[in-house]
Image (cartoon, rainbow, N blue to C red; front, side):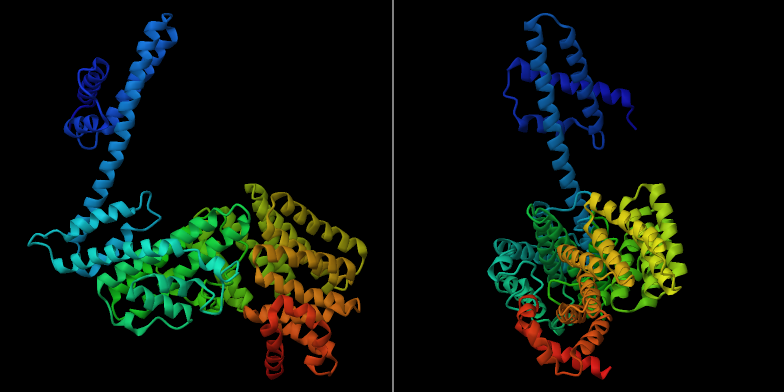
Length: 610
């Protein structure tokens, strides 16, 4: 091994020679000239030493300039510094280019040496966007060229490597065709979110028509029509097809997330759409993996992409620790979306990203009414978060457990979990967790007092204070998710105290806040209790909100739609539903549309059958 001292001498000499050439003007010193000298004379793995020598010389000359009084000498020294900085800039560019080349060479060599059955897994790992420096399009073009060259006789199944190269080439070509149309669906139909039920209104058919690829068009068209993955994929294990799919789907996903994240006018909407996009593509890869389960290594490679996407989602700074999954880009129910993640998550050990994804799934399972499953998921996520020292996730799961035990009317457990969350949040400076814990604690104490028939005003006033402090903290943090939870909890607390105007005030605020963050469940629940508040105040608006709450919660399969349906039935008083709804028809249609309005009797018929 070369001694560092000898390396410094070697590289100091190279620097001196380059400086002499630049300052002497005997030769034209271009970027290419410097790179050629570096390539010829810098030893592999030692460019950092050269970089250090350059910095040492720059520092030394800058010190000379600071102490030099002659302007002429200062100018000469300054020219020398600029020359050294130019060499340093070329060195950085050369290092980056060489690193990119080494990355390509390493991947090509790995593909050549890996058993044919495992090659897709190697490639999919290389294009993982969680890598510090994932392969870009230019590097993939070089991979294509290298794989298309004549392979040595020692390489197993060289035809497969050529097929991989062909898949890469086709995928990159499809992306070029799709790029101008990646976001056109957002503007063509007048929709803002793209969560369309009709194939003609969503993005998938737009992309299918523009893909210029039979394979891509077949898949995207099926998704647009909300049909299962075509059987043709189950019978097609050819690498060319799956490499093309990986490149195209990843390209669409990256383009959408980048655009949503950069929205300056509605940042919260953009962040929600980014997260939903990641989960949508994760679920799609799960579906593809299940489709090819007759080919275990191919199925495993597809699940690998699912895990990569889930990892990317979990590491986002705006990860919704206090929210859930409500929709996907193809308009499918989120009940189906949840089932996609069971198998891939089982393959992962207790990592931070697993704990966070399970937290979201727990929230969503609670929405579906699977309370025991939600408790199990929160408990698992809590253990993982504690092991991974992920304090925000740990506090979030304590808060989630507190709220779910409130639903079960187990106030002792609910208050206990909220107290633990509050202590831990304050110890760790987690103000979002503290706001939620204050809300849960105050709400739990209000409901517990009500269950004990303690109606003294001072009992409620003290606990309402906790709720108001949580709300004030959420507002100061501009944390809309926590603010929505606080407004909902305050509304329900005043509802329990039969203070109808206050309940209406906070529940109305809760609806607006839940709408702004896209929390369909909380939006629907506020409508349910707002209907009860209006009913208590003998306000005819109860009919409107009972119908809206029932429709909203039924759409996302939340069990509480029945609560609203029961109130709606009481409000009808034995009268035909359509006649009763006629009074609020003009208010319902702008919100749920004519189709939604016409669907209300079907929901009530389902309630009657239960």
